[in-house]
Image 1 (spheres, rainbow, N blue to C red):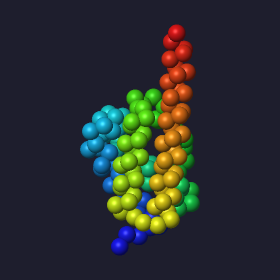
Image 2: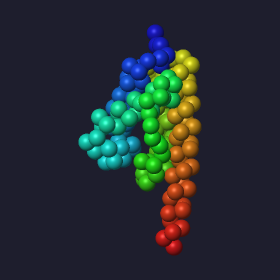
Image 3: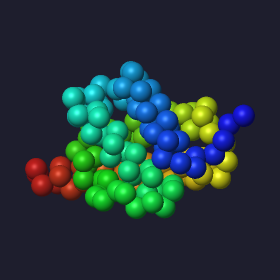
Length: 129
């Protein structure tokens, strides 16, 4: 029986499983692997702290999540696929209020990042004209 996301160990299982899937994904893997390169350990640690802060209310993450994503070569199809993988990962491992919250928060974050990246790209392209 699946349990909810309740501890940092649960967060680590979620993050590790999700990013293992991302790294092997045909659409998203090349983008993540190129940007993160040999810093996967550092990235995973940051993601543990981010989700620990967001889902468990244990304030271990400091930073702004958007700036590293601002110049990524991604569009709506990438965000939809990212969300699909995230949802499948959560559903395969967990069940409960926090699991539902994780999916909701990930969806809102993907939506916001997509809007911000589109705006960033539009403003950037206007400066080239």
